[in-house]
Image (cartoon, rainbow, N blue to C red):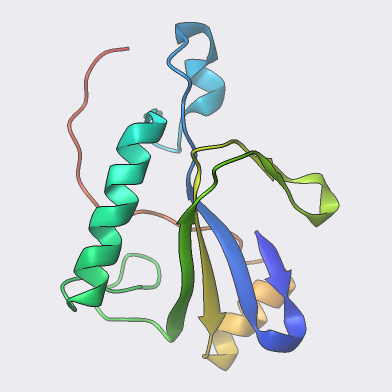
Length: 129
């Protein structure tokens, strides 16, 4: 998570790709122990953005049912590996977003480090790796 304090912007990794190698699945897994290939991430990101622009989905907080005071500034797929300040890095194929945090309480959570990530609110199909 990259935080730009004066402008209240955060850049977050939404989803990182798995390279398809069974020996790297554990280190590529998300919090549900799922892995996703880069082409599936790209399709999900583009689907989200189309639905977001049509008002069919929103940026929420903690999987709530109402939009949060977050504004989408950028949504993209990393075409090359990226290294952020502080040494955090993402692989090519990762889905990232830059968000403006309008709510003071949310921004306080970002600044304190209590809020430092994202979570997809979606569904998928599991296949054994």
